[in-house]
Structures are given as C-alpha cells and as structure tokens.
Image 1 (cartoon, one colour):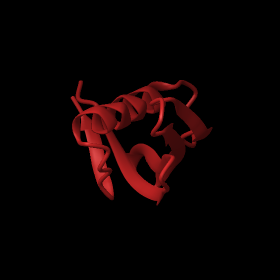
Image 2 (cartoon, one colour):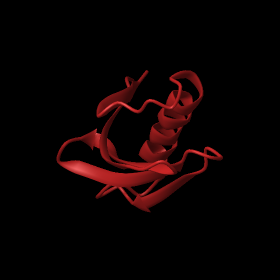
Image 3 (tube, helix red, strand yellow):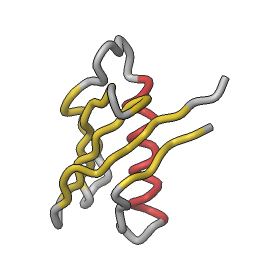
Image 4 (tube, one colour):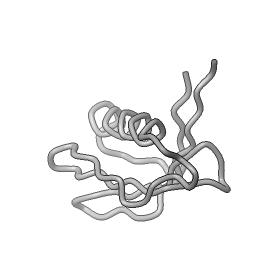
Length: 81
C-alpha cells in the first residue's frame, strides 16, 4: 500500500517552521519543527485521524530536510513511500 503525506508551509521564522500536513488539501493538521534541536510538535491533529500515522511521516520528512537540505524548507513538499 502506498503512503502519501502532503506538507504545505504555513510559517517560518529563524527558530521554527510550521507546516500543514495530511493526506490531501482538505484534511490537514499542523506540525511545528524547532530548527535548533529538530523536535517536532503536533499543533493540530489531522481531522478524522485517530493515530499519529501522518504526524510521524511529516516529522520524518521535516527532520530530513533540516539535516540534508541546509535548513532550506520548501513551500510544498511530500512524504511518499
């Protein structure tokens, strides 16, 4: 089964970045990544989601961007497997 998580940047400062995330544009939660330590916080759950499935994949993608992309966060990205 394929997995897809859409991430859309909402806010970025020197210290953190906030993305909306979820399976599609109509069902998005919010995640915040601290640029200093790579800690992720779920600000809003994906509507209708009862697990942290989407959060864990979104966090994985953002941590990878922090480590491998020189901290340059795109306006839109996705996690797919």
